[in-house]
Amino acid sequence: MSKIIVVGGGASGVITSLVASKNNEVILLEGEDKILKKLLLTGNGKCNYWNSDISPIKYNSNDEYLLDNIFTKEKINDTYNYLEKLGIYPSVKNGYFYPYSLQASSIREIFITNLKNKKVKVITDSKVEKVIKENNGFKVVTNNGEYLCDKVVISSGSKSYPKTGSDGSGYNLARSLGHTITDLTSALAPIRMNEKFLKDWNGVRCNAVLNLDINGKKYSETGELQLTDYGISGICVFNISSLISHALLNKEDVKLTINFLPFTSDPMNFMNERYNSLIDLNLEEMLESIFNYKLLHVLFKVAGIKKESRWNEISYTERQRLIDVLTNFNVSIDEVIFDKGQVTSGGVKLSEVDVESFESKKVKDLYFTGELLDVDGICGGFNLGFAFISGYIVGRCLDDHN
Image (spheres, rainbow, N blue to C red):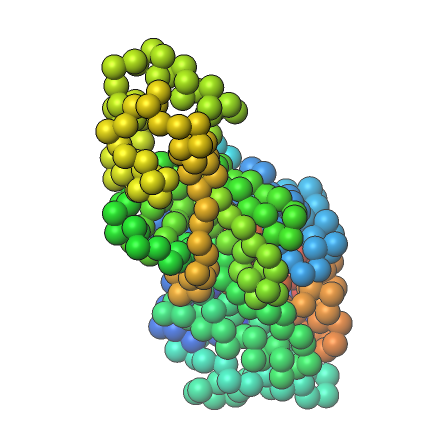
């Protein structure tokens, strides 16, 4: 039996503690007054905790080549089966897993109950300030005392939602133990634009395709787009925000455009046919059942076309300009907004840990889990999925070693 300290009472830290507690003494240290605060915010309080499509291609990392070793079918299935055994009953919609109660608090209470049953010692209001390697073990220094242990797991999260305890302190602990932290940027975050018309389209939601070009490499996301007074948001924006963040950081050439007419592959022909069938209508009347008025007026303004004009009255150049605005709307990216990001991209370099166990290659008996590592996923339960997978892998490894 080993004495194990887990730093951080988030999703990955709790799973690590539960799995490792079978044959070990486990102490879970949490800097906040409660564990699992961030979990309560996920899925707008409904807790989208898993996805049926978890696979390497849903994740980003600077050491991308290692993701295949993490997200194997066996590890994914074993982790999900463990969650079921804890008592989580799912409601599945389009591959998104929620607790059937649709309340994040349900999952939190299940975890708390299991921690008590498995006799994991949970100590809150205990901020870890230092982790020091000593002989065959560690000394963990907190704001209210010191602990000696055989093994340490750092599961203290990233820099997103610092009010929940994810204040980035885990990165400093990792650095102090010799680990490299890759560049930290925002992921699952909205984009700030620098345009005068933003207040005019604020509050509009629409279906669109986002087309991203980074140094000639192309990406595409389809979904509901949210237009705000600071720029654009929505799941389709979140899913490419990590790519944009890193590209901007590396001063790469980034171009992002919006196709507001994703349902047609020939927009010029679509407009011609629509005019011919609605011959007495002006441009605003032709498009008013397709676009929200607020958005439509912005599109006309950007294109420099009067809404009262008729399709047959404007020149071919003007038609082409309007089509370009409708289908290739340029997004003037000011920044990916870090403070509004749900996840931090970057972290402890994956190549510095053994991805079969998440044990440090630099310090024996030191482990990392969850968002502290340089792995971030798209929207849809993928980040919580990784938190659970990494926590389960570490917990099982610690349990197997005893």
